[in-house]
Image (cartoon, rainbow, N blue to C red):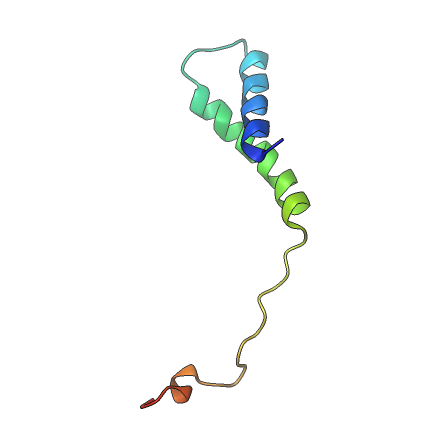
Length: 67
């Protein structure tokens, strides 16, 4: 199941739990996103690696012609 479908299902569960109120779709969607995305971000993407250090101690401008 893709992420958007999981969010849609969770938003629907929230809507039902709150007694099916009218006009709160965006609120329920936002709440579902907050609940679903943190758990999916680590599982789907894996651990976040730090950005590699590029050119430590070098001046990118010095490597350009005329720089």
